[in-house]
Length: 173
Image 1 (cartoon, rainbow, N blue to C red):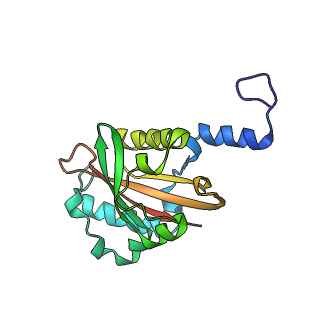
Image 2 (tube, helix red, strand yellow):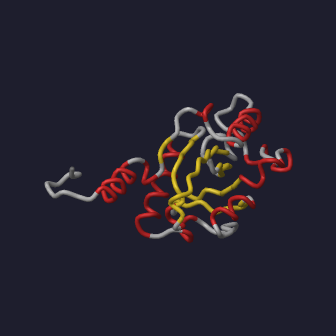
Image 3 (cartoon, rainbow, N blue to C red):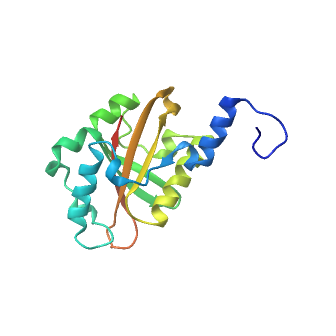
C-alpha cells in the first residue's frame, strides 16, 4: 500500500507516515475519563481552579497544593513571536523518563527539523482552542520508542483570554 504515490513502501515506513498524519506522531486522546493516573487528578485540580472561567490564571495554580503530582508535572510559559514554550518546571519522573532536565529550555532548543515542526503544530492547535488537550505517543525522539506515554496539557491565562502558560502532567502506562 502506498500513501499518495504509486510506489510501494515498507510497513515501518507506512507506520511512520501514518503516525505523522495523526498529530505528528502524537495521538489525540478524547476520553479524558480513561486517562492513566495521575492525569485525571491534574484535570480535577485545574477544573477546581477554573471556577467557571475558560481557564484559570497562572497565579491560581500552586504546585505545593498537589505534591503527589509534582514528579509528573511540567509547567511552561508560552510566547507567540515566535511561537514557543519555555519550561519553568519539569518533574523528577519526567526527567528520569526523558533522560534530560528541560527546565529553563524551550521546545525550539529541545527539538529541530521535522520533530520541532510537529511540536509547534501541536502547540498551535492547543492554543487555538483552549481547554484540556490529551495526547498519547511514544518516546521515539529519545530512542525509547518502546516506551509509551500519555499527557494532558491544560491552559492558563493571565488576562482570561490568551493562553500564557500550560500546566501538564505525563503518565507512562
